[in-house]
Length: 152
Length: 152
DNA sequence: ACTATTATCAGAATAAAAATCTAATTTATA
DNA sequence: TATAAATTAGATTTTTATTCTGATAATAGT
Image 1: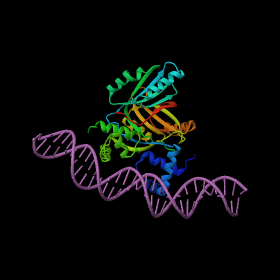
Image 2: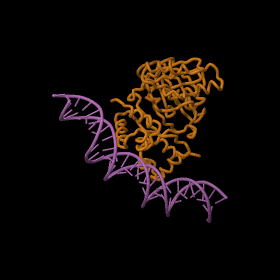
Image 3: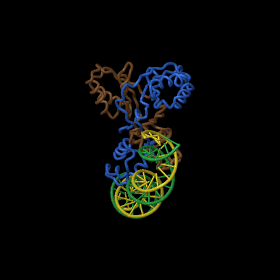
Image 4: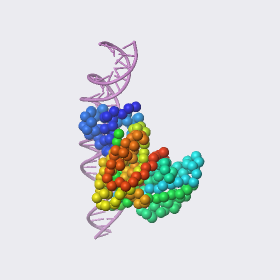
């Protein structure tokens, strides 16, 4: 599996607007509609494209409070890790969770309505998860950049 | 502008799969195709839905090295902030950048091919930006959760 | 170098979905 | 309660996706 220049351009276009027609894509790539269609299908079947989604405007959805939570576990046993990660996966407020290097074990991105909702999330959801040693939260003051598009 | 329960369910569906047809959505929501169509158009026009995009599988795109960079500015003048934020916006490797509370000023999410590409990014791009005081990088060991779907 | 095999592509035809229109029904409002 | 506004359903039209056929280009093997 190797992506050529056209594939990369196509992925770039689709990562920024997946609703444009194959005809529009064909024009931008100097290809026929069928050629575009088949390349897209190929990229979908290979799993390079994982899904198509609608992105929302946080403020318009009244969910504009963003926090980043660093989390340290008490002990790094296999069991603790699995239990913690499962629990996090079930929290709708957590959009991203990464196991990372450094002083803390995990970094979470949390989105809620406001500070009160965040307090509730912390007290009633996050800190009720087992094996959490300590947490450290940072609040978003401003979103400077947000994109889902990976450029190759 | 106020979103009812049906709008929220619709947004939830579209945030997870924007390629499903209005007929499929209509079935899930117990509505007619036209009703779905008009609600979607309303949500687009209101700006609740900002865009439709394709999401990629990092590994399949050979861009699976993820780093989080904390950055402190030398001074927080209006000018420094604007210049820094503009520079960051032009870096393709930076997918997310947030001005945050806490010890550091900014948190960046960076995606590149591998550690060597990250070194190159740091030396040739990030640290050439003016007004940066100090940086602190953490590397992703494992992606536990990643979604773009905000649940209301 | 030549042939067989595979990839990719273009254009036409068909199927499916989106978009529009009309009218009915529901909901909110005076 | 009457009126206006918003939401909905079903039919129709338009656009797009998908399939099909065949041609062309790239690749591998002898």
